[in-house]
Every structure is written in C-alpha cells, then in structure tokens.
Image (tube, rainbow, N blue to C red; front, top):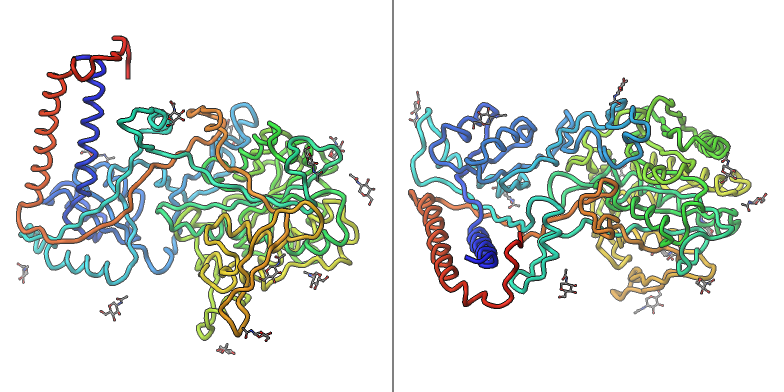
Length: 623
Ligand SMILES: *[C@@H]1O[C@H](CO)[C@@H](O)[C@H](O)[C@H]1NC(C)=O
Ligand SMILES: *[C@@H]1O[C@H](CO)[C@@H](O)[C@H](O)[C@H]1NC(C)=O
Ligand SMILES: *[C@@H]1O[C@H](CO)[C@@H](O)[C@H](O)[C@H]1NC(C)=O
Ligand SMILES: *[C@@H]1O[C@H](CO)[C@@H](O)[C@H](O)[C@H]1NC(C)=O
Ligand SMILES: *[C@@H]1O[C@H](CO)[C@@H](O)[C@H](O)[C@H]1NC(C)=O
Ligand SMILES: *[C@@H]1O[C@H](CO)[C@@H](O)[C@H](O)[C@H]1NC(C)=O
Ligand SMILES: *[C@@H]1O[C@H](CO)[C@@H](O)[C@H](O)[C@H]1NC(C)=O
Ligand SMILES: *[C@@H]1O[C@H](CO)[C@@H](O)[C@H](O)[C@H]1NC(C)=O
Ligand SMILES: *[C@@H]1O[C@H](CO)[C@@H](O)[C@H](O)[C@H]1NC(C)=O
Ligand SMILES: *[C@@H]1O[C@H](CO)[C@@H](O)[C@H](O)[C@H]1NC(C)=O
Ligand SMILES: *[C@@H]1O[C@H](CO)[C@@H](O)[C@H](O)[C@H]1NC(C)=O
Ligand SMILES: *[C@@H]1O[C@H](CO)[C@@H](O)[C@H](O)[C@H]1NC(C)=O
C-alpha cells in the first residue's frame, strides 16, 4: 500500500473512532463512594465495571483521585458533588509552586530561590489540576438532581451484605468530547495541516486581553519609546482558575487585588485631573497570569518590540497588588527582590510612600526580609527583562494566607462577604461589608502612594480616599451576582469587557485623545428606557496571547505554551440498564467499528492506486 494510502487510512480510522466516541458518551454503573476503603469495589471487586463514581467533596483528595486514575480501565467518569460550605481544612488543586518555571528565578538568576526552594508559596497545593485523567470529571451541585442519583444508587446498586447487586442497575452516561491530543506542539501542528479532509481546529492558544488605562493620554498610535515620558505601573491580575470549568471565583487570588486597584484608580480620578503629577500612572490588569504569566509576558514582549505605547525604559517604577483580602492581623507585606532594590533611591521612595500612606490610614506595613524571593507575580516578568524598582503588596509574609488557592472554594464565603438576611438584593449591592471596608483601606494606601510616587504634591491635602460604597458594589457584582442594576448599566457581561467599562467609568477624564465607549446607563424611575451616554477615557485593551504563538515556538521555555482543547457541550443522563445490555452495547459498537474499518481498509487498499494515482508522495515522506 502506498504511504499516502496508509495515511488516509489512519485518518479514516481516526474519523470512525471519533464518530463512535461522540455518539456514545462514557457510560458506567453508578457507584456512590462512601469511604476511601470503599474504592476497592470500584477498582477490583465490583462485578459490573466500568463505574461512574460519585464523590462527596471530602473524598475529592489527591489520594483517592490518583487511585482512580491508576484504575482508569474500570472508571468511566467521576462526578464530584460540590458542598454547600467550604472544607475547613483547605484545598488547592494547584501546585505548591505556582508558575515555577516562568518567573524571574532560574538556573541563571538566583538559583537558590528557584523552584520554591526557600519559600513554598502554596503548601496546600496537591497538583490535581496538572494530572492527566483518561475519563471525564464533572462537578455536581448538591441539589435535588444529585439526590435522584443517590436514591437510584441506593435502590439498585448498593451491595447489600457483601453480595453483588442484581440487574437492573442504575447507570449514567457522561458526554464530554475533547478534540485535542497529546500536547501543544502536536495539536498546533495538527491545526496547521490544511487538508480539505480535516479542516478541524482541535485546540486554541489560551488568551484574552489585558486592560490598561493611563492618568494622562498616551499616544497609542506612536509605539515604542516616548521621550520625556515616565510611567509608574500599577498592576493586578484579572484571571483565576479552578479544577472545574466555569467555577473559578478567585475571590482572594484575583478579585481582592483588582478591585483594590480599580478603587484606587477611582480615588485618584479627581487629583490626577486637577493637579496631574508629572509622571503618568499606568493602570494595568493582566489576563492569563495563572498559566505562566500570559498577559504580563506579552506586555513585556510588546514593550521590548516597540509594539506598546511606551517601552521598558519609560517605566519608572512598579506597584503590584497581589492577594490582599485576608488581612487577619491587620498587616500588609511589601515584597521585593534584589533586582528591584538595585535602584535604591527609587525603591526606598516607593516603600516610604507606601508606609507613610499606611500610617495615615492606620495600618501597619511590613517589609519582607531580603532572604526571601518575590511571590508569584506579574512583576517577575518585568524583572526578567529589566531591573525596575518596585514592590508587590500582599497580605502574607511568606506562604499564602489563601488556603483555597486556585480552587472553587476561593469564593465570597471565604472572603467573608455576606449580608444580613433582611436586605433586598438591591440593598445588598450597596451594603458595605467588613471586607469592603478593609479593601477600601488598602485602596486608599495604594492611591496615595501612587500619587506621591508619580511626583504629585500635597497628598494629605488632596483628600485621596477610596470610596467604600464603590468597593462594596464591586465585591457584590464580581462575587455574588453580576446580574444587578449597576452592572446592567455597563452594556456587557463578558468579564474582561466589564472590567474595561468599569475602569473607564471610574477613571473617565476630560483632556484630548480619548477612546469613546457607549454605556447603557440607568433607566429613570418613571420609564423602562435606559438613558445611555458615552464615556471618554484612556482605557484600552491589549492582546494577552503568549508570544510563543507569535513566534510559533510551541515548546518555548521562555513563554507560556498553554492551549485549550476544542470541546463539545457537556451533558449527562441517568437511566436503568435492564440486563447485560450495557456490555452488549459496548461490544456491539466495538464490533461495528472493527467491521467498518476492515471494510474500509479493504476498499482503500484495493483501490489505492486509483484513489491516489496522482500527486503521490515521495516514499520517504513521514507523518
Ligand atoms: C496501580 O495499579 C496496579 C494494578 O493495576 C498496582 O499494582 C499498583 O500498585 C497501583 N499503583 C498505585 C500507585 O496505586
Ligand atoms: C536550596 O536551598 C538550600 C539552602 O536552603 C541550598 O543549600 C540548596 O543548594 C538549594 N538548592 C538548590 C537546587 O538551589
Ligand atoms: C427539592 O425537593 C424538595 C422536596 O422534595 C422540594 O420541596 C423542593 O422544591 C425541590 N427543589 C427544587 C429546586 O426542585
Ligand atoms: C443483610 O443481613 C441482615 C442481617 O445479617 C439481614 O437482616 C438483612 O435482611 C440482609 N439483607 C439482605 C438484603 O439480604
Ligand atoms: C490554510 O488555509 C488557509 C485558507 O483556507 C490559508 O490562509 C493558510 O495559509 C493555510 N495554512 C497552511 C499552513 O497552509
Ligand atoms: C500620535 O502619533 C502619530 C504617529 O507618530 C502621529 O501621527 C499623531 O499626530 C500623534 N497624535 C497626537 C495627538 O499627537
Ligand atoms: C471629584 O470632584 C467632584 C467635583 O469636582 C466631586 O463632586 C466629587 O465628589 C469628587 N470625588 C472625589 C472622590 O473626591
Ligand atoms: C516633576 O515636577 C517637579 C516639580 O513639580 C520637578 O521638580 C521635577 O523635575 C519634575 N519631574 C519630571 C520628571 O519632569
Ligand atoms: C534610579 O532611577 C531614576 C529614575 O528612573 C534615575 O534617574 C536614576 O539614575 C536611577 N539610579 C540608578 C543608581 O540607577
Ligand atoms: C435588618 O435587621 C436589623 C436588625 O436585625 C435592623 O437593624 C435593620 O434596620 C434591618 N434592615 C432593614 C433594611 O430592614
Ligand atoms: C459612571 O457611571 C455612573 C452611573 O452610571 C455615571 O453617573 C457616571 O457619569 C459614569 N462616569 C463616567 C466617567 O462614565
Ligand atoms: C420622567 O420624569 C421626569 C422628571 O421626573 C420627566 O422630566 C420626564 O418627562 C418623565 N418621563 C416620562 C416618559 O414620563
């Protein structure tokens, strides 16, 4: 058979398997796991594999998951029942050392700090998010439908007195089709193949947009270095992740930081318009930082390649707001690195500005000792490129305070955002919780320090203070309910765009060179018609797509290479299998596939010369 013939055969077989896999989901007999010992039933003794295992959240641990992974032949899928309250012992499916290989510390720079050798930032991390599982894992809300599944299990599948249950058995089918294969290099190469027979894209690079704004308009048409321009960057990250798709509230890991930055930007609006300091403050919100600093590495790359409104030499100093929502001992910590301390005058000035602002607000700020590296932060990507003075503000001195880093439990409950039960939804929106009050204090410190750092005079006299009502509204909107009267005015429901509109609304200013944005506005009390208006602001989006994809270097060690598989909508159904139907069905599909492929093989190999007579590949072609 010709090489090309074989190749098409492989393609066809892949196609046939794909069809059969997408027609039938993963079917398995329901097994509600009652304890870790009970795993034995699933992994070896149970007579009706494969099983779909229903896990209560206390059993969703590394130990159980790794045992199930090891026995994946007998596991068709897992459904984890999400609890109604956070587990008190903490849980983090991320690694102990987030973004271990893409920060500033490496074998070339400060190797003693590399790989979290000195400080393990996320000690509770169990790494589950980075394991490969051969079966789908779903999350279920603990509601009536979950109760139906449990009842079905109790009625039909539970082994009574050690004897195997009889048919009919309760079964579940989980549909979750992922197109991608192996790794980024392989699937990006497959994307690039332009055969008419498989025009399918199997995976996409992870990416979104960074949001940025400046206190003075920067000419964004003229890229690269700007003479006379000196910017102070104020940064936070926008993204968060968790083990499960679409439940990544990131309350402490992301929201606490970017709300503080937005509130600080709002607090600075009047002062920066009435008495503009002679340095520009550049607010930046980075996307995709969880996945090896996608957003910040792209901005640095753009600055290095004259693709951004300013370049690295324009950057005077850097202030990053990290996780600041859990300030239990009422203390904030300033983290820095010897590279950022290189320019002692600017660095000392920044720390002094933060400390005096904190003094005015009545919060103590500690400087972390020099024997400790920077925590995972966007600032590391800037330091990788240039020793810029700067600090990262956190609520922890060494390891994260956050016990739920990158998990679905890093939520409003964890940040203690809760409301008296007699408030209506609209009253909750305006209710200032203790957390809102605490973040307002941090925002005030950040705003005053930024103003001073940018060269502003008379900080005390300008009354730069963050608005607790604004912080309260943002906390409510990002963590509790985004479908509220305030967010509805903003004309978007997509998170990045929401933040863009919000930043525009909070910083909107009055000089030239703006970027106009339509805002739906509120409806007056006697009408349902909204009164829209345009906001003039300097807010813009910049690409947050890893430079690795620009450079087509899919195995880059320098930049993030995360891709996301294309997938089909998830769904599941529960039903009773009457007899050996299940096995028969599986066997039937298997035989069907085999026969079809044999037939196809026969047809193709017998007609190969005719089918592939023209354009034959050279015999040394490999695929
Ligand atoms: C994985 O399963 C095999 C048997 O299937 C067993 O021998 C081995 O010990 C298991 N490994 C772990 C880590 O559980
Ligand atoms: C880890 O840190 C210790 C000191 O705490 C040092 O002796 C050791 O060399 C470090 N390991 C690496 C790989 O840098
Ligand atoms: C769940 O079931 C209870 C009692 O069976 C019922 O009162 C309640 O309305 C149900 N909830 C939903 C959301 O169906
Ligand atoms: C299980 O055993 C108990 C006592 O040993 C007995 O009362 C019960 O009827 C048995 N259940 C079944 C389903 O056989
Ligand atoms: C694939 O096809 C598109 C148009 O269909 C074309 O623009 C692109 O350059 C092709 N890519 C390769 C790698 O041939
Ligand atoms: C912005 O820069 C572009 C390109 O250098 C220039 O043509 C334009 O006049 C500038 N705009 C302003 C308002 O200075
Ligand atoms: C900003 O100035 C306007 C009028 O100049 C005033 O109404 C508003 O309260 C000020 N905002 C802050 C946060 O000081
Ligand atoms: C900023 O303004 C102050 C006076 O207000 C001046 O001394 C200083 O040189 C200015 N800095 C820059 C970078 O223009
Ligand atoms: C520190 O930074 C300032 C402002 O960018 C610069 O003027 C000064 O020369 C730098 N000092 C050193 C020692 O590099
Ligand atoms: C809610 O209840 C508290 C007392 O429990 C009361 O002080 C408060 O006024 C009530 N608020 C509203 C909006 O009714
Ligand atoms: C921000 O939104 C509020 C309420 O919708 C509106 O009154 C205000 O004018 C907006 N500010 C800007 C600068 O768009
Ligand atoms: C709504 O009320 C405002 C003043 O309260 C009035 O000017 C306006 O005409 C009213 N609009 C309608 C549609 O009745």
